Length: 200
Image (cartoon, rainbow, N blue to C red):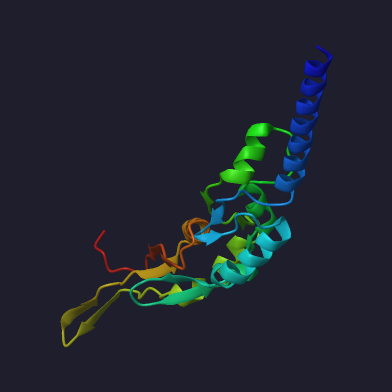
């Protein structure tokens, strides 16, 4: 009986030691199969994972977003528009780290999944950056004219102008950044001329 108790205590001690060791091993690395936008970071420490993501995805994430129509275009630089990548949060969401939950330890040592970069949009900064591009899309309206030439009425129709819909463009740029896109159609709207020759 004493032998059995001793063996039992020994087994518990070994298992406990293994559990504690697993806690520290798992706490210092990401989930084994973790990947972010196709970049494998499994088994790396948080610092190593962050460094790898910055090296392989940082430049692409900083690419300007092009707003364009058939006749005009403008670029939004993410850093100037409050658009950024939270690499630390990305690494955290990819899995791993210290936890006493045995299922999370197992997932760190043998599991993991594909995730995407955590993209941050500063709603207070982006509208002004979009507004700054509005001039690239602006087309002044043309007033209508009505005159007599050689005794006949000579009429020129008014032509609508074009302006950027800044609010809609702001939403479009934010969505494009969140989805990792670098090109988006610029939403515009017509601006009527001050003078038309429409008959009352």
